[in-house]
Image (cartoon, rainbow, N blue to C red):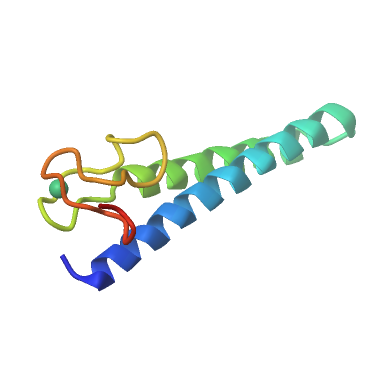
Length: 98
Ligand SMILES: [Zn+2]
């Protein structure tokens, strides 16, 4: 496993967490907008559609990442991002992992 792989995994990890936080902020803002402002049914549907789309992309990001060494799915091993070590082959997946 190369330093390049590790770097990409770390970026993926950070991106997944960043997007997850952004997603929930977006959910809260959307709920706020629907609750407190007079929005049309169409705007509401658009907001909800965008939320589902974003949630789908986020799940894909989380569950399509594989271990560069043994190709095990990493998304199932942790709730979010990538684990420190692959649970299947034990490979360290973070540059600072032992
Ligand atoms: Zn592995």
